Image (cartoon, helix red, strand yellow):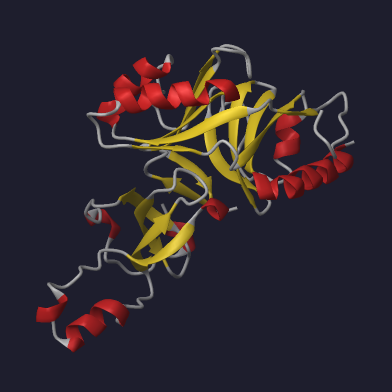
Length: 105
Length: 181
C-alpha cells in the first residue's frame, strides 16, 4: 500500500483516502475580459507532462478533507514531499530528474 | 446488538441511541468560546476526540476534531435544540457555520478484543495502538464506504456511517466477521 503524508493530519495515510486534483501552482491570469483567448486557453488546458518530479494538488478527501500540494515522481510514483496549500514548492524537491528506485528518499 | 450482525465473544456491534449531531466549521479563534458554550472543550489537536458523560444520557457531550477547521458535536437527541441555540449565541462574533446533521448518519459501537482486527478487514488505517491510540478520531474508508472512526478505548470503536450506506457497511462487516471466526 502506498502511504501519503497529509501535511494537515501530520501522519502517513493510505493512498485510497486521497484524490488527485491536477497540477499545482497554476496561476489564474488577470480579469477574463483583459486576458487574450490564448492566455485563457493556456490557463485552462495547457499543462506540462514531464518525466520525473511534478508538483500536484491532492485532496485528503476521506480524512481531513483538505487540499494540499505534493511533489511526486511520475516514474517511480515516490512522493518526494507534501506541503500545505499556499506554501511554495520546497526548493530541494526539484525540478529534478527522475530518481532511480534505489536512490529514493 | 445491531440488526444484521451476529455478535461473537470477540466483537459486538451495538446501535448508538438517538443522537443530535452538528458540524461546526469555525476558525481556531472561536474554539474556546464554542467549548465554553458547549460544556466540553473542543479538542485543539486534529484527529482527536473528547467526551463527557455517558452515551445518550442527559448531559453527554462529544466533540471530534476531524478537519483543520471542522468539529463534529454529538449530544443526546433531546438536547439538540438547546445546544444549537447556545452555540449560535456564543459564536455570534465569529465567522462560522453550524449545521445540524443528526439524520445524515447512523452511529455504531464496535467493541471487543477483535474489534480492531475486524475493522481492518475493510479499513486501510494502521489501527495498532501505537499508531492509532485511544482518543484518536478520523474519517476513513471501510471498503467503498466513508466512515468516521473514534477509538474511545483500546477495544472500543465509535463509528458513524452515512445512513443510506449503513446497510452495506453492516452487511460487509458481518461478512468479514464470519471469515474471522
